[in-house]
Picture 1: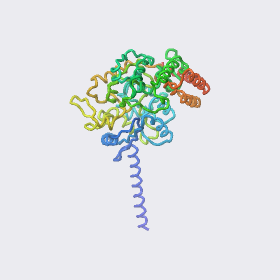
Picture 2: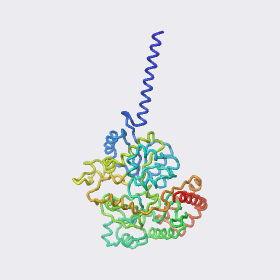
Picture 3: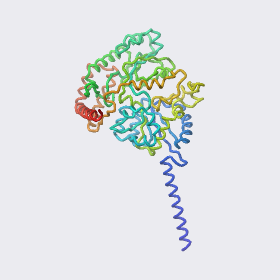
Picture 4: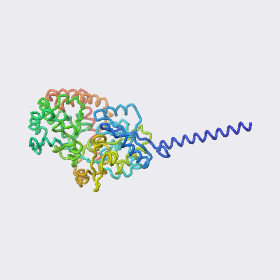
Length: 480
């Protein structure tokens, strides 16, 4: 009997030790402590690169030493990213952090896909909070709560027309005369007549200088002077702009499949004359470096800080993350540690780029061929190494640009669509049917804008606009 009791006692003590060890293992795995580093699953946008695994071997050596975590980066190509991430989010598939932006960021935050970050930023991202521009934090808040870390870069939106400089010089075009979409016509005509391998216009959606509520595809905008919500599809500006685009489409200046094409028009393919996009200080130098031929831009608006410009590149932590604290530690390190930020962005020194004696850098062939990452999407710009042809005052120019940007009337206001969710879904379907076709000039707006507006009204447009107005008025009163 004594032997049995002794055996039982040993067995119980042994099991207790095993259970305690398992508990410790779980704790270490959950908090990233102990010998087992936590693996951070990171989804981001951009064409998958050949050398990502090689670069992230170096990243993981560093992050394991600094915060006892490793990072598994998965890039999803430009045209597929949004759809695939929505599938991942809807399925509940676990991941830690993902790139997001604009209206999708707001909608996913409101749906509960992302962790609230105010407390995490204060506890695990103290250094990061100190370096972020305050307008980025305020503009990225949804219903008063921060759900993502914006890239610390330009805060204002300044849309520009960007031209292939070789063709500008060849035909002696004076691009300083270009102030509107209609001003492009003589240049487009000449390119079409003389450059058979060049598309006069890269595919883009026509620019309307509006303060959008939600996204630029849905019909809601805010008049900053009156504080009134309106349907921009009914505006004279939309009609005139879409008519110009339709004229260009019929003339063959825009590709025939513009409304359905997923072609992202990579800058390094010299098959276009003019394109449209959002700029930043010295953007032409950045784009020229990426393209490997010269580009030059002219602005079509003054810099203005919109919700879309401060939420244009965000890293959000998923509510499915097993360790949001460790993930925030990684985002803190990525955005405040110069070595890590440049390693993720530029690759490995001596392999993808080399440093000059003055601290500036130049790309090596391997970076162009095997590790060309989308800089804007990855974090704090102010820690990036300057290239040898960068102006020495580049980051000071960014700060001046940010200081000079005018806040939009809607900055910080994010519409809560829950009360009109059904109507928004119906209106989104109408937008999907009409927006791309109108904005790329594929259809005649005199025929299709009235059709779109009738369908918007049938889908509940007035109810949604009333709800938007009510929420905006309440927000404005609270945030005088």
